[in-house]
Image (spheres, rainbow, N blue to C red):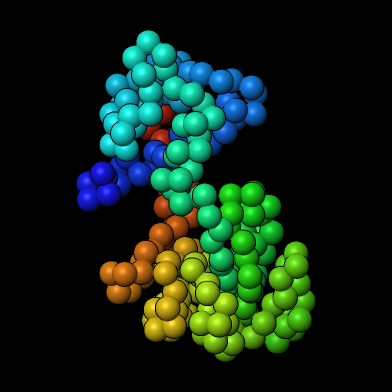
Length: 212
């Protein structure tokens, strides 16, 4: 199982399964069939079964899925059964919003440091985290076992910063800068282009209006 290559399409659906199962668990739902989950999520029951079979299945014929168990198992697959330490680089409006989002902490993503180049922000706090000079980020990552760096800085600053982070042992970068980063293959990168999502929305509006 560990050697099996799982497609990115399957992986991209796992957080959605996790979110819906979490909602069901909070409502007290104990068991659910693939068809019932399909009706809620608007994913075919066949696709759900195929996705789960990549990891061993989790269900029994005629019995369905135990919601709490499936929620916990998908959480483990996603690495949410342990804590992840993060730093955020760039504490403007977007950076503050991300660092202040309490649901990340509930999922085990804990911000340990915040960095900016603006001296007026040094010593201010985002929640319990103090904003530090950006020049200190490399030593902080090395000395505090930081796994993930969140970049909310301009694209011209993001590329050299990614190289610095790679050199000091970062494991992953969540990149909101408007540039695709190229780093060594041992560093995981998730590039988030907010404008791409908005343009996709624009396309779907246009397509729908033309179909009327």
